[in-house]
Length: 564
Image (cartoon, rainbow, N blue to C red; front, side, top):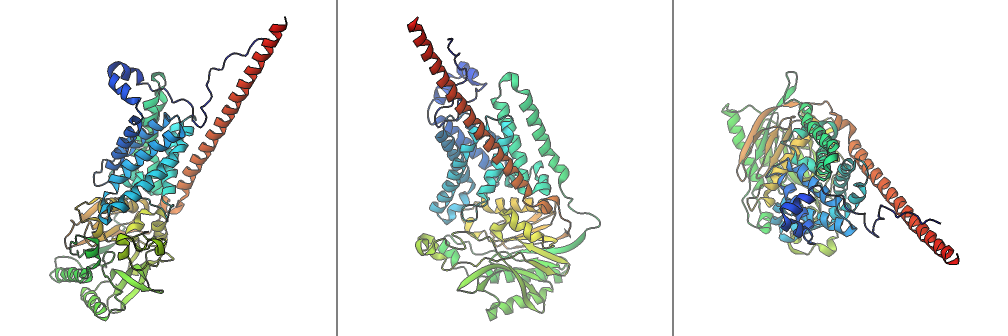
């Protein structure tokens, strides 16, 4: 009996993902940079490259704004993960990338303390590291770069939901406020923008790892992905049209004392007085004919540090300035709630009648507006400065003032697709993002307000709505539906912005389809991963059977030969 021929394809190692794909640049590295080839054999080399890629991704976001790196950095991670031979290699590559990305991206969080900044960064990095285990199986599939791009969007979807309501900061879409890809937000929201960028990243990775004779397809794919991103400029809503209904709006930035510590910030009591004074200056400008009387005025988040409805003096002062203004004001207020709780709200204050409807923030900040497991954690460090939890709102609320129908996303909420979409779907024709960034700006780092402004610009395009950003300390801005900032304030100063903006009620495709694109892309990633795991298990089983058959044939032949 003739022995079975030896197998030419090695079975994947136990717990591994098979041999890495051949790198076309390997020969060039060996001949021209032998020191680099030697370094590449070190255990630290590939995680170090992953960390460099993570830093590059951080540079794609404000305040740096090098948005093309949003495709380059994930491409580098895909290349590294494609060569990961073991599960733990994929995990550590993803974790190194994540730490190097989130630590600089969230540098502004260090104002709250080094521990919360690093803890959140490491938690996000570990999540990414764990999810990177899915990439090596995916790269064994045809058109692997497409499934890797879908995986990235699925990762963002998961991070935006868990744990504790998720943390959407750092999604690729939020780096694209100045990029041509921004227009895709009007079609499929932030998930589709991320997908377009991730497809370019995947195609770039495929081109970088392809053999010379097989570079045509990934090169064409990369060119198509770049062209697809560029087509986003054709999808941007117009800044204004002749038949638009319009309104004059004002954004008040009253400023607060530039406290040096959280404890000092918590004791600031002049915030309401500052915004009243800034609004009085607006009244003087109106009376002098320097500006037009606005149809609506927006104050920032926490513009009052106590419930103005239950404080006779504060109520009288706000009523006085609103009556002098002759226009409704949406006051960012701390409102009393049952059970010794409070609400973070936008409170509509009308001339002559006082406080009316309000929207209460629904997406609260863990460890900022409430303490999970308060009995266990509430006594630690600066958490003691949060003596009671906020009560979340339970529904979307529209604030109506004449022709203006306002939807609010308070501060942190602007990062959440569903919250903004629910507010717009109430029939709103104007978006507002009141915020309080004072805590995150004490070291002169403008990362947080600039990142938040970029998100607000994306939301303007996504829903074809003019968007007002009002901050206590900066950056406040007025954004048109095409995502352009027509005016903005500097940090740590008192300023009032006024502008005429279009009011629109038409829903974009993104508003109508909601989260469907995100779920569809996530389903593609899950299906591809399931197929990859099935094929790997089938191949491993075939390899085991083949090895067993080879051993059996060899044994039979040996017995027969000895008996001849």
